[in-house]
Image (cartoon, rainbow, N blue to C red; front, side, top):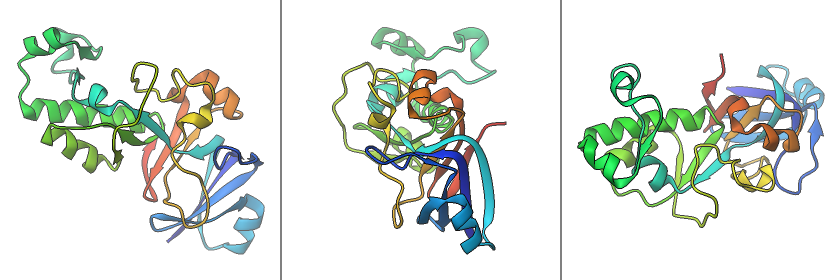
Length: 214
């Protein structure tokens, strides 16, 4: 099935000119075409159309996944938050006090991947050594990459600590590329950087809509 994702502005990648009224045509798990919505809509009138507010960009990449997913615990709501609070827990001593089993680590990572998808993240980079955590990442649809250098402390918001939003993009939007992108309630890439990734409206991975803000 063909799906046409259209937005007020499309930013295909670093160094690419922004396209007002741009759209991405998805076939299966790949991008078939990128261009103006009016042009693609006319050429592929039978395609399902999803129209989004804001800016459509490549999905985002988070570095330091081992720190975020294996050395941070995300309490389950509501069963644990009354005792532990809602904030993520990190630090060797605090984690040791929790006496985490591998199953709890995996469940924590699963909750974290949902938070990442809700921020437009499509890939994470890091060395994951806990099998249950790796499984949670793979099942989420996120791409797991080898470790990459990072300066600022790892964050669920990949736009934190970068000078330009494009630094957090994973790949580019072009014909033949994997269909993984996100839409944000922002006017352009500069506005996206100022707001952060919590304004994510939708996240598409392998052609599937894995997050949609309600």
